[in-house]
Length: 318
Picture 1 (cartoon, one colour):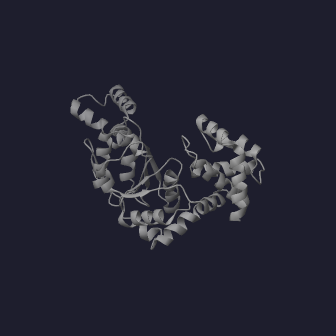
Picture 2 (cartoon, helix red, strand yellow):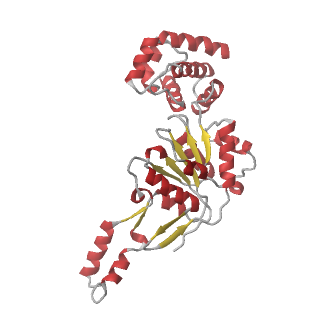
Picture 3 (cartoon, helix red, strand yellow):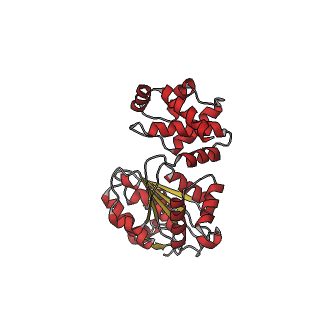
């Protein structure tokens, strides 16, 4: 059995001609990439190659896949990796409960009478009893825009699964012994992410295009906040970005990412804060820092210092 896509072309269907088209489209959908990431996405679409994004948590790796799905119109299919994940969780499984019900129903109505055990067993392994997990769903997507396959936190999976994944991404086909080969004529758009809790093997990296996602610079972080939190004033966005930049320099256990910056700006806006002060920072610190040790580090450093720097730098930038 072969299931194939219809030959849908990323380049023509979403009008990608240059990296600038990618930048404009992602920005239009609420994601502001730098030049390096823009080029990496453009090449991944044009060359139909998986894109491996590494970087600290919260810098926007997973969000990029979500925005790509919104932009292209392809379904977002997410495979969350974890230690011990195997093919039954990632590729396919059989619906044993439905198979058992079918068998009992066939016995009750006498349908199995006179039939060989092989014939009865073969009937249980039909596609209607197949549970398609993320990888098989992405490869057998059928007509329309190819899905965006997000393989999230690949660094959490073990070596065996990574080797299996390499094989799947090389051929974009999966064999189900009872049914045959599922093969994608047009591969899904594949985004892999890693927080680098361990190194991803060279073989998988060679199969992918690669980009290290940095924390944004000050100006781009301000622009991201203004884009994602339209109600946030330019002054408050600059102050928040300055404060977050200061926190990242304090050797925290978990430095805040862009996601936390956006959450913080949104929280401050909901509280009616128009300018940072010690009280607003102290009472909303839980939206930007998620570990008690980091809160303690900020208290030792001094909230007043962070606020002072944010006010001064924010006004200078304005």
